[in-house]
Length: 171
Image 1 (cartoon, helix red, strand yellow):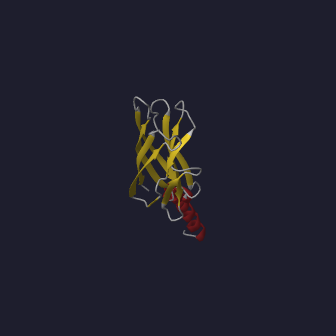
Image 2: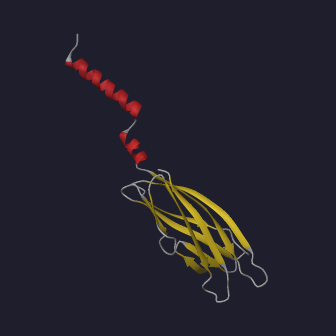
Image 3: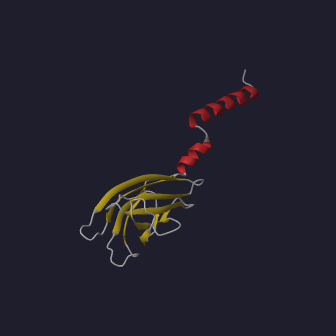
């Protein structure tokens, strides 16, 4: 015999089974709200010495996931060191906007490309910097940037660093 109680019990079992198959709603929505950004590029660094100009080049790559609960991230890419005394860093801040776009700008506390020159590769003596032109990225898009910085702290130095990189917003 078919009764309202059996109908409710059957509906409850059906809802329970659907929950197992579909999984929790919060997990599905969090995955949809996550923006994935890939950054890859390369550095070229020159140490200007009297009798030679040692150089160094290096590549970098990182993937960043941004969500409503983790909407900002600062990422720092170090270069190789030239002549045991000149190195660079690319410092970027990524910000997930409420509409899903991702904004990429110089990291807080300084310009995006920084040139360090001193007596070793671990020097923190900042001798030059350059701004990275900001990027506003939509899912499915890619954008390229490059910048160069020269040693502005020493009059007769041609120490330099350049960086080229690509920002790919995959989701």
